[in-house]
Image 1 (tube, one colour):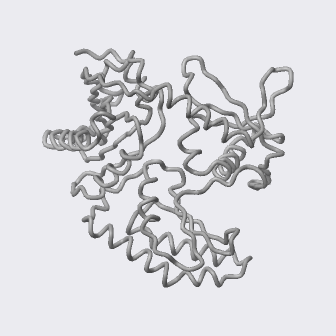
Image 2 (cartoon, helix red, strand yellow):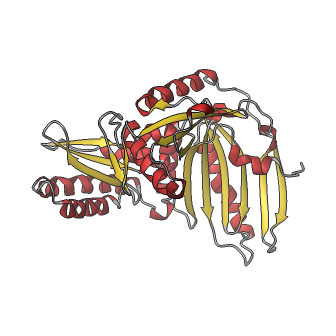
Length: 367
C-alpha cells in the first residue's frame, strides 16, 4: 500500500532525494563489488544501508543486488509486488546515471522456470517438483485463478508452500506479471489421475497467463462511454454504537461492463474524529474536498466512483479504473505533494468483478 501524504515534500525535494540517492550509490558501489562471493552478511548490510538511502525518496521500496551473467552487477529496485508503487520504482530507475559495471532494473525480472530453483523451509521449487492447473469459476469466468501443485505438498505446511510458491512465481514470471496477471493463487497436492484435472507444466504458466490476459483485453477493449452514476446514502451504527456513513453507486450493481474497469483503487483517509470515530462537521467537509480533488485528478473517461465509507476514524473511497499505470503515477504525485493534516493511503489491485463492493451492493440502501 502506498501511503505517503505524511511525507509531504515539494517537487524539487523529491528530485533532490533522487539525486542524493544516486550520488550515494556512485560513491559507495565499490564496497559491494569488493565483497567476497560468499560474504552474505556484508552484502546484506550494504543492501540495508542502500534501502535506508532510498527512504527520503520513498520509504517502502526495497532492493536486490548481485552479479549478472555478463560480468556486470545488477541492482534491482522493487516494491515487492505493490502495484501502487510500480511507478515510483520506475521513476527512480529511469533517473539512474551510467555507472561502470552496473545494470539497473525496475522490478524483479522474469527468469523463466527452466533451470531456477527456490529452496525455502526445506522445500524445493523447481520445474520437476512444481506444476499448476487453473480453476474456472462459473460466476467469475474472467478471473485467473490457479493452483500451484507440489509433489511433496503437505496441508499442515500450507503457509510454507504458499510462501515458497510465491517467491518461485516472482522469479519465474517476474514481479509485474505475478502481481497483475494472477487474480487468485493457492497451493495444493498433485490431483489423482482419476479426478480428470489436467496438470500443466509450470514452464507453460507464462504462456497461459498471456493467453488469458489477451482474451480479457479483447473482450473489454471498448470501454463504455456511459458510466453508472446513481448514488445512494446509508447511515447506520455498529454493535458498539459507532456511526457508519455509506455512499454507494447502486447503478453499478447489475452493470455488466464492470470488468472493463477492472482495477480497484482504494483510498483511505485517516482522521481523528469524535469519541465514536465519526468526523466532526469541519472534518466531513475537508474529507469530501479531498475525495473530490482525487476524483477530478483521475482521467474521467477511465474512472468510476463506486462509493465510500466513513467509519471509525477512516474514510475509504472506492474507485474502479480501466488501467493502473496512469492512476498510480497521478496518485503518488498527489499524496506526495498534498499538504494536509490527514494521512492519505492508497492501494491498487485487480478486482474484475468488483467483489469488494458486493458487501455494499447487498445493503438495503435507499435514495
